[in-house]
Image (cartoon, rainbow, N blue to C red; front, side, top):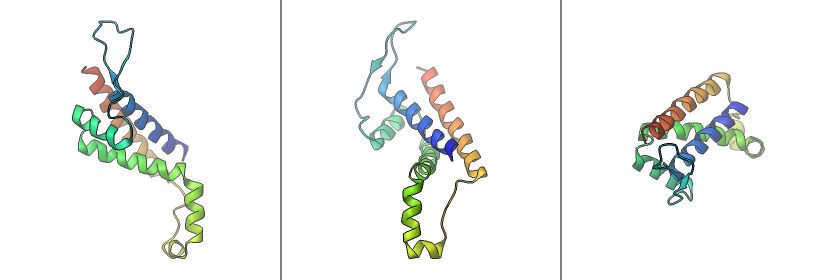
Length: 124
């Protein structure tokens, strides 16, 4: 479960840094120019990343899955308690863990997304 939460954190932070920084025009940049426009919430960050061509819509779908799994882990206790109290969820069954295969898939998706962002930064 910890790896899933780390994947969410890494992808969100990497994308935020990519959309909120402008490359320096110097050969050896000694400064970072911030561009905090349109970075107030995830929807704005997502839109800016698509507009800049950092990630494709398909990549964003992978990132969405990574974020959803991370949200599940981050709010695990709260969700588990809510599900236990719900008669409907008891009939449907409880999701109690992020399995090994799902965690491995999240790690692979994270590497894919982060590599896309790094490649985009390298082209600047």
